[in-house]
Each structure stands twice: as C-alpha cells, then as structure tokens.
Image 1 (cartoon, rainbow, N blue to C red):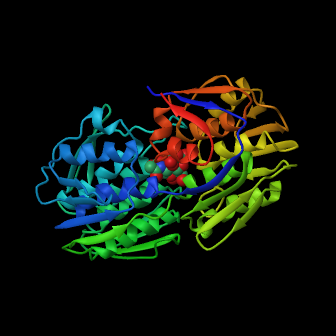
Image 2: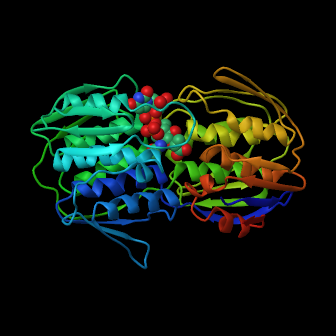
Image 3: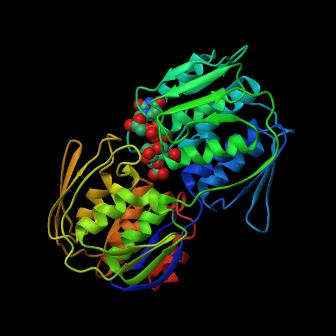
Length: 416
Ligand code: EPZ
C-alpha cells in the first residue's frame, strides 16, 4: 500500500488542470460493450479505477488500446461474455456497470457483487429491480449474480431513490431493448448527461438525461463514435478547497462552473476569495474564514463526495460548522482521522459538527475511503509538521496525478 507524505504549512501558488471525471469514465468504459463497432474516448483520467475496468474488459477479450494522445480505443466485436469473478469485480463499485452493459448487449451477465468505498451498505436493489422490469431474471448465489433475459422489453420504471448508478445501469439495459423505457425519479448528475450523450453518439435514442424523467427508445444497432469525458467536478472542487485552505493564488483550470455552483456558493459563504470564470476558478489567500452549514443532496444539491473534503476546510473557519449527510449512512470516518491532527469534531447520527479555527498538527493518519483520503491531503497541506497518509492507494483511485499536480504548485508532498 502506498503512503502520501506531506510537510505542511506551504503556501501554494500556480495553476492546476482538472482531468476527466472518474464517475463518468467508469460508466463510459463498460458501455463500450453495447457498441457493435469501436469507440474512442478522449480525456479519460489515468487512475486506478480506470485500470481496473480495463482489466475487466481484457478479461472479456475486448480489444482495448490506450493511445499516445491519451485516448482510449475499445472494440467489442471480439468480446466473450464470461463470468466476472470476485477479484475483478470487487476492485471498485463501478464494476456493476458491466451488469447493464452485458445484459443490454448479450441478455446475460454473471458477476460478483461490486466493491467500492466503505461509506455505507450500498445495495444494488434499484439496479436489479430495473433489470427485472425490463424482463430479466436474477439468480443470486451468495455474492454472485446471474442476470439473464430471453428478451428485453421497454418498461416504465420508478426509482425509489434518484440513484446515479441505477439510472445509468438501467439506461444500459434499456438502450437496445424492444420498445420504450421511461425512468422516473432519475438521477440528474452531469455524469448521467455525459453517458447519455455518448450512447446517442452511437445511435441510441435517449432524451431527458439531466432531468428526473429519461426516455429510452430501444434501437437494434450502435455504431462507432468518438466521445469526450467531461471534467471531474469533484476533483475540481477538491482543488478549489485546497486553494481556499492554503494558497496565495491558485488557478483551477478546465472546470464547468455550473457543476460546482453548490460548492462555490458555500465557499463564498465561508468568506473564500474565489473568482469563477468560464472554465476556471481563481482562489486567492483567504483569511478569517467563517463556519458554514452543509446539507448533502442529489444534484444539483451539495455533493456528498465533497462534504468530506470541505470538512477539513471547516476546521479553519471560526465557529461551529455543521454537515448533514443525507446520501450515505457511514461517511464521517474521515473526521476521526482529522481528530488525530487536532480537529474538534462531533458526530451525531447523520450530522457532524466541526469547531474552528483549530491548528492541525501532522501525524500518521489513514485514508478510510477515497474522499476521506482527499480530505486528509488538505489537512496535511494545512498542518504544521509532517503528515503520513496510509492506505493512499484509495486516493490514487480517483485523483489523476494528485502528487505531481500539488508539487507543481509548491506543495512538499511525496508518494512512497
Ligand atoms: C455514485 O455512487 C458515485 N460513484 C459516488 O461517488 C457518489 O457519491 C454517488 O453516486 C452519489 O452521487 C460512482 O459513480 C462510481 P447512488 P452510487 O446509487 O451510484 C442508495 C466517489 O467518491 N442505493 O446514487 O453507488 C445507496 O446506498 C463515489 O467518487 C440503494 O439503496 O450512488 C446510497 O445511500 C463515492 N439502492 C444512495 O442510494 C441502490 O440500488 C446513493 O447511491 C442504489 C443506491
């Protein structure tokens, strides 16, 4: 397991460019299976979650090539639809997208329950109910699922919760089905739009992505296409928070401001000096930060993925900040690590309280999950002394070149 070591207290200055969105790329890559020809993806982030998905595609004998210009080329005509075993499936949550893609293309998928960050139980009941509504039968044998259908027919599906994964997975299973599928109470995250546009570029007929009602008219054939991964709004938000925490002047390039509205409003409420341009944000040294209250919600509400990162900045705000986590039931583990560094935190069910302004002191801490790890990087950059973040591989799952990007703007950070 890698460690990230940070000697904190440096003031950062310069520019950081945001990479392609992990939570788009991890859906776009399995979806290549649905295509009858070949696809080319641009701006795919070079992160371990992408490598894990490439390994699954290779296991299925898909043709896959990472070109010198960073583009990912996938051809599906050599695919053998075989079981995806535990070792491959457990590496990440997004392996579940192979369920919708293999079911949608071959009407059968056999694979193990997905992995993913330990931020809650993270069932996949909504995915499975969607598949059944389209005509699939599901056999569970322990951790293993066999999902198959004689034929897939369009259906009206209502999601009890606007689940990102279930919305995308049902789109995959419906895109080549007989007839029309409606997904009501669909998730509206930008990644959903990125995926729907990709499928439409192949010849799919999907309308309403980005709204709570998505219509999918099944088609028989999906042709080659070229598609670009959108910028990662969670990576962008992480660097904006780092700018607010310890920079004199940090420019975050390649952002889509609309995707960051909820965070940027909160940063302004805290007194952060942030200027948002068409495709970048400039954060200047921000003193006298104030406490703030955050309630996580589905998009366009405040993203659950950023509350763990903002929690670290809250330690630098004067007063008591509050986080109300509505999406996952176990997403405050990072606070116990922050406490080791001197943070004053209290957790009460789905609410957390953080008192500031506190001095953070470097020590050994542990990345319990991806975004908790990102929050610890922010803490290490702020803290006096040396912070050693153990289990740092989790951070590398979702942040392309994070050590190089931060070193380039003056951080004293190494990966061991
Ligand atoms: C996606 O996870 C993201 N992961 C998560 O990002 C993100 O936090 C989450 O969406 C919410 O925005 C990927 O895209 C790979 P959900 P997903 O289905 O699809 C419950 C990160 O750090 N639920 O919207 O798993 C579930 O337990 C990761 O990048 C069911 O009950 O999220 C959770 O409480 C972390 N049954 C809530 O819904 C289901 O069938 C939201 O889950 C599915 C979900």
